[in-house]
View 1 (cartoon, rainbow over the protein chains, first blue to last red):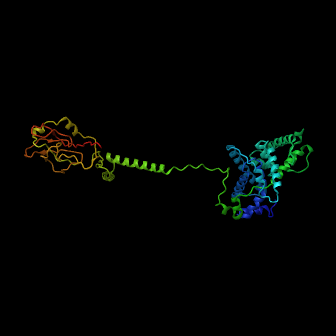
View 2 (view 1 turned 30 degrees about the horizontal axis):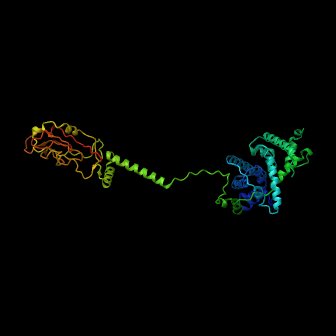
View 3 (view 1 turned 90 degrees about the vertical axis):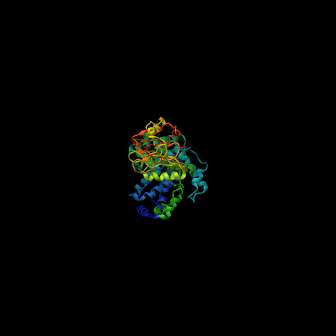
Length: 188
Length: 268
């Protein structure tokens, strides 16, 4: 954990409705949650991320556990929001803004120059393009394993599958990625 | 061969980004590292609702509505009906109620108090009147017998003749018609006119002399001369009788009992 105070204290302060604790939790978990949502190829991914944290903060009073459990709980909320957003997108026509990547990379990182933001956005788009070749379930497992840093058992609880099924999805996803990257090498 | 190297431990090492992998898996490892580094990119900017939570906490920020999003399910609101349609609906219901009350009052099935109230309203706003309510036995309230009436000059012998067919038909109890034009005199056996016989008879029994509206009942009477008359004439009030005169044919008949007569009056 990157916060100054132990996470249990931060959680206790957040349950006591301390604003600084919510800000600390958002600072810790916003980057991986944002990356997780963006890798799903959703439009308005930032709105989904904000909804995830709003739901988490409003339901924090009913949460009990440590940081690991909180991480799993938070990504479970994110997973449900992504599923809802995916269903909503399936019912509406898909549009893509031309400068969405540049706009997305600009705020919140003043230490990044516009060139860095553009390069990061391009890399992110390339990663997302490769992940887009996977099935949604395979992509979900890979992203949760890498970005949320969760073991197979907890990923299985999030996606509602057995650990064996998650391992099978993970194995097929890595094999597909390996084959794709051998044909179309991606450099980072 | 490649698939054999991707065992569970190798996959876990790749996904965790720990440890060296074979050169054949370098591309996959590089890709997964790039995916991991994407989590360090700029996070999503906090919305106004989140900033409010950061300042004041969840409880104070609960009043701040969240920004609408495409993922927020909103119930489809039913469009409001135009005002004129709502007014038309209210007017239609009111009209139906008024029509129902007037119809029930004209049929005489309302309670007496309500019947009189509706009758007063109808009389005030229309040229019509509504009769009294029915009694529980099906008749009208206060059916008082009217004084008997006979045509002037009618003799007992004349009274013994049966009345004309139209007069006989009208003596039977007809459907009630409590609604009649206002201002018109209530048909009565004592009313002067060609349709009734002259009030030359004397009621045989004491009682009210006025007959209820729309009815004409004839009680046993005694001629002016004081002679005994075996029977009484019963003539409908509004049925036109033949012209009264010396050679007038007998229009009255002897009816042993008093029969209430109600006359239907059609609305204009």
